[in-house]
Amino acid sequence: MIFCFIKMSKRISTDEKLVALGTMSKSFTKEQVEHLERIANVDARYKCAQRYMRELNEGKKGERVKALEYYKKYAKILEGLECIDNKLWTDEMKIKTFSDLLEGYCEKCVKLVEDSNRKHLERLKLQRDERRKEYEAEQAKYDKEIAALEDKLR
Image (cartoon, rainbow, N blue to C red; front, top):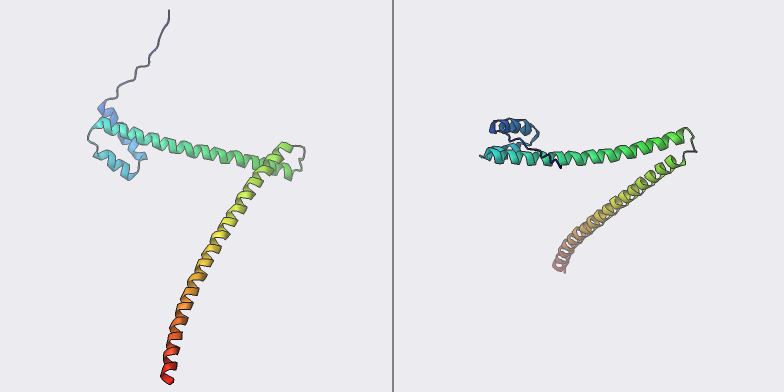
């Protein structure tokens, strides 16, 4: 004999939905709350609020994942520093991991500085060209004035 258990979802009453909406709306932005208030149907408003909560929770999940990645990197850096400070050269794996992390960040830093220098160089060249054009325009103006005065003096 096979038994099948089916979970029956409890229907939430309109009053319960309104209470839940009040609680959920504390987490929403002003624009989201105003949007919810414009929805007349309570069921539609509740579903929209649930969608907003899902989006909010997904965003927090991404933040938690990023924080966990940083924590793991930081832990490896601290372990590597501890090995180096205490001269524990026998724990090669921690030192190698630490070294790899530092090399990766060094490469990123070098690239960042190179990109910044490249952009600064481009800005300087543009400024130089603009100044050259301004200078040449001013020279042309003076050349005209000089030519006009020379013509008058002849």
